[in-house]
Image 1 (tube, rainbow, N blue to C red):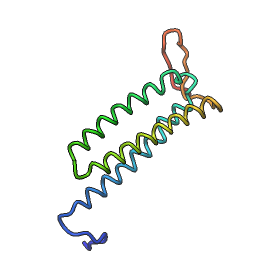
Image 2 (image 1 turned 90 degrees about the vertical axis):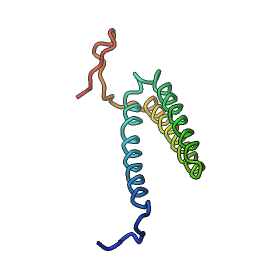
Image 3 (image 1 turned 60 degrees about the vertical axis):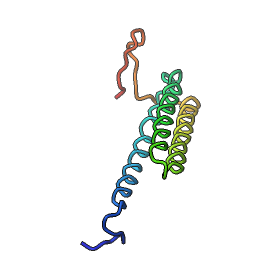
Length: 123
């Protein structure tokens, strides 16, 4: 099979390609799932939303710092990419909260048993 990407044998270009593809899929999944759900259901989730976002940020920071400590040659891009991702996520959730509170649409969850904390997904 011809080498269509122009890279030599024994390189890590395949791994870089897979990582890049996987990261784009992760970013897309993150952006269309959690912030969207938060925006739609913010009336019930506002009190706890940012608590969980910030707990996730602490976990992310710990993993990024460990990766940077383990992989010293790539420390700067690991820190830059990781903390940029954290900042973007923080902004997305703040925007989702603001948008949901300012312009509430139909939620995706119903809370028929609020007295006991139960919920059901809306149809």
